Image 1 (cartoon, one colour):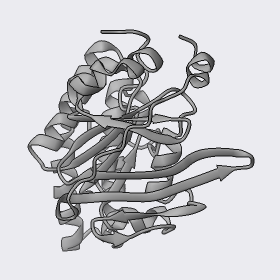
Image 2 (cartoon, one colour; image 1 turned 135 degrees about the vertical axis):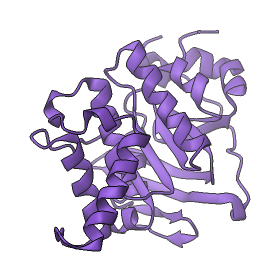
Image 3 (cartoon, helix red, strand yellow; image 1 turned 45 degrees about the horizontal axis):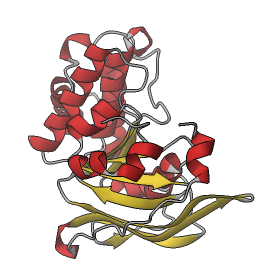
Amino acid sequence: MAEGEAEGRAVTVTPIETVAATDTILETRGLTKDFGGLRATNDVSFTLARGAKEAIIGPNGAGKSTFFALVSGRHRPDAGSVTFDGQDVTGLPPHEIARRGMSRAFQVSSIFNRLTVLENVRSAVQVRRGRAFDFFSDARRVALDRTEEILALCRLADRRHVPAGELSQGDKKKLELALALAGEPRLLLLDEPTAGMSLEETRETMALVDDLNESHGLTILFTEHDMSVVFNHARRITLLHRGRMILSGSPAEVRANDEVQSIYLGGQA
């Protein structure tokens, strides 16, 4: 079904379940943002449990990237609030929210193509630690150790001396993840982590995302258009339609919803 036809249909609004406050790492209340005459997000209230791995889906223009931009501080909301790990971060600049433990990757590349993989990650680690890169300092050794840890974690150790501009699409995505991890986050926001990838690159990237969540305890919230990725990797899915959060549930619940089938999944079973 065409997007225009989908948007013309009535959508049954299902209340989104809330998460107990003690288990919540991210919460928005009434989050609203207008761009001129367009309401990109409309009264969005959303909770994300600590340790979760969730996906937000919806057609192009649904407001997914705007929601991420509001949560991460790239845009200031016209109304509503954002609470991260128990602290009100509404309207704070991106670097301040990142310093508190939230990292965002993929929507806007932060890779320096002329630097090697190691140099990219090392620079990001130094920015996070906020210290001059003194050749003889203990801080330098600690930063290098952390850089090597991140390279190993992201399966990039054997690519450390390769200029970033020469990496494959899949390895560039791994490098983006590595740069996000340099901020020592507790929450990772991933904008379409598999966009432009081959099937094998998609498998490798999502295996890494799963590992970060399951073995290292990072909370993951991602947007994705590839429904096979969403259903195979998200433990919970929220649907955004015309700026509103309209449904949240397990992959099985979302897949079985007739309205979702018709509007978002094109009748896929």
